[in-house]
Length: 136
Image (tube, rainbow, N blue to C red; front, side, top):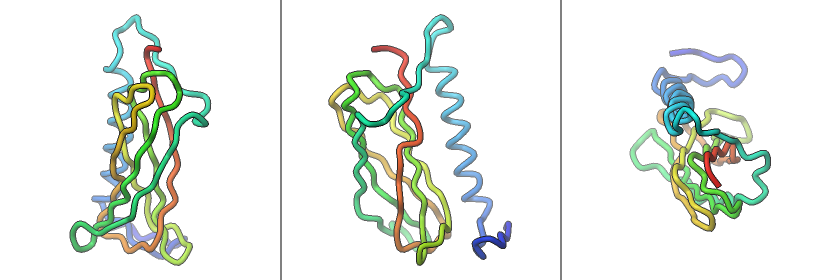
């Protein structure tokens, strides 16, 4: 385990690996999702995407899940959307979870969950961290 001094919390290798896997998945998807001659674009503004949080819950002891949904009002077919949720205890950040949503058409709503294990949090703050499209 890695002990952090700033937050005074332990981050396990499981939490670190979950974050690494999510980032690598985003990179791999970006590279493999498009033919060599296709252009992959990132939305410059997320104003036309609507993020909604559900109620955080504990599916098993020691794990937390934050349900999220995103409505695509951009008019573009989104290949990939990444949602980042900070998990907080008494206002102090204790962990970060990611939700990855794929293949969201214009006007559609996609659902997912950002989760962490071995964390004790009482609230979350979530944001859209990225959205990628390769066609209009």
